Image (cartoon, rainbow, N blue to C red; front, top):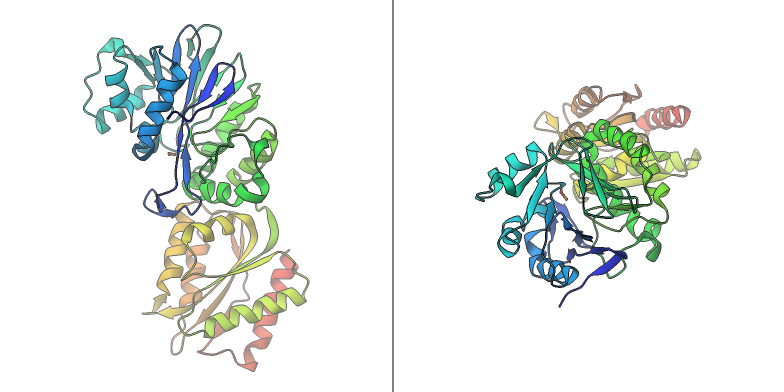
Length: 400
Ligand code: FEO
């Protein structure tokens, strides 16, 4: 049975939600599921804005047919070629053989890479920056958004109803439960953490490109944003635009301290706990403590984007950095983590080295500094190290 919703009188949401998938991209846990949004525009000509993931295909194909209500599909606009959105191109072409596919030159390269689909020239509409497609009353303008989140990505702006079809931008993890608009749900309460985790882990590396897209978007009169994942924005666009601006400039949301520790037998954990108590006594209100070994990396990355100050504490392992912490540092670097103040705590029973090694990585991160009040513990925290921990606490408080 079709399961569609009206976005406006002539535009329909025709996507689907997956609550079975455990890991998005086979990496990121999605306990609240994920939606794959797609939209049908009905006019003199009909257009489908993107397809969906293979997993929701039965629902998606029924939804498209339901929205078309017996009409044929004239255009498929492919804003993004990642398979969570493009899986149904071939089947659509079979169901609607006269359908033309709209994309840029890179889109068609990727279609050839992902599919064996013998498209004739007349099946393709190749667009570039600011090209338009007239559907009747509606006109789509194509705006290139390279690396948000793949090189072929583009967004489509419909100028009559002032709707931005934003591809991966402004999306969020989380299945849709019938409510598809931001004003039908509690975004700040129920969605913001997943939106942050989605942005920071999926698009986080490409802050500069997101800034470029935001600048282009600022020149458009936008009434509604229709992303490929998560809720549609029609009431509180500024809430997410402001967050995107902050995240893509790598500016912290909270002046506060994130402590991430790795600990084999609880000793380094004890140091992290002791520091958190001192920070609380020093008046730090915004604070969070996580164990690097049992918190998913995507959660740590999202929190690291959020806080201004980060303390990393871990043992020395095989003469190097404790492996789960090493993996986190690698991910931070890969995602261009920037503009943070770091503190470092190292542990080592015979040759502590993790602090020096972590510092060497952190100093390569753009706009980041490492406080020179490194704490070194040999095995367990003893009274004689309290002064060092106090010094780190004071240095953090002073830099806030
Ligand atoms: Fe939701 Fe980059 O795909």
